[in-house]
Length: 402
Image (tube, rainbow, N blue to C red; front, side):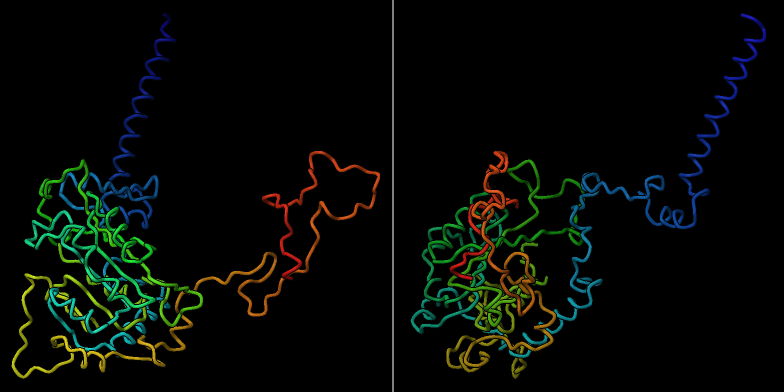
C-alpha cells in the first residue's frame, strides 16, 4: 500500500468521523429544539411527544395505560358538556334552545317504588319513553342490588306501559356476558324493534388508582364500556314525524347525558325510568325507584319545582304538557331551521332537496329503442343493456307511474 493511498484512507476516516459527530450534534440540537423554527419549537416545548421531523404528535395511549393506569378514552376531545360543539355554533345554539324548551314544560320529579308498577297498569297510564337499568349486568351482585334474571325482566309489564309510538332504552351491560343477545330477545318479546345501540365509553380521569388497579376481568382486555339498546314501538319516520322525534345532535352511575340525549331525540313528555336511584330523580320524569334506593326526604316547607313529589295520577296528568292535544315538547321556527333533518328522497338526475322537484321524462330502455340502422346487428359485448351502473333491465321510471 503506497503512502499516498494510506493518507487518503486516513483522510476519509477523519471526514466520516467528523460527519458522524456533526450529525449527532445536529440531532441533539433538534431534540433540544434550538435549531427548530419558532412554531415547531413551541410545539416541542408544549408537547413532549411531538416529533418535529414528522410534524406530528405520537400518542401511545396503550403505553400510558400500562405506565399510569389512564384509560385511552380520557383524551377524547369535547367529552365534557361545556366543550361540546365548540367549533359548531349552530349546534351549540340548537342544544341551548332544546334545553330551554324541555325545561320550560318539565313537571317536578315524580317517584314511586318499582313494586307499584302494576298500579300504573291498572290506571292505564302510557309513556312515550321508558328508560330502565335492570340489575342483571355483570356488576349487579357487586352493587348490592336485588338480582333479576332475564325471565324476570321479560315478565315486567312494559308492553302495557308503552304508548304507540314509543321508545325504550335498556342498559344491558358491557357485552362480556349474554346481555346484548338477551336484551334483543326481551325487546322483541315486548313488541319493540331494536334500532340503535348507544355505547357509553367510561373514563377514569378522576378515579384512576394507578397501573394494575382495575377490577379483575374474565377476558383478556379490561371492558370500559356499557351498552344501551334502543327500541321503537310503532311506526315513526324522522322525515315526516318531526312532531315526535328529532335527529340526534349530540362510575357505576350511568351518565346524566343519557337523559339529555333522550329528551333531545324524543319530544314526548311522558317519560318513565325504572330501577332508578335517588340521584337519578329528574324534572319531567317519573322514576320507579329500585328496592334499595330509599325514599326522598324533602325539607319541611320546601316547594321548589325541583322538589321530588310522590306519584299521583291526577297531579301528573295536569302537569304533563300538551301541544295541540299531543304530549310533546313545544318547538320553534329557529329549532326547525337548525335541527338536522333526514334528506328527502328524489328520482335520479333531479334535485331531491328542492320543493318542486319533478321526475325526468320517461326514456325507453336502450334494448327497446329502434335502431337507425336495422341491418346493423347489436354487438355481443353490449348485450342490449343500458349503459349505466348495475345494468338494470327495467327503465329508471315506470311509465305507468310517470
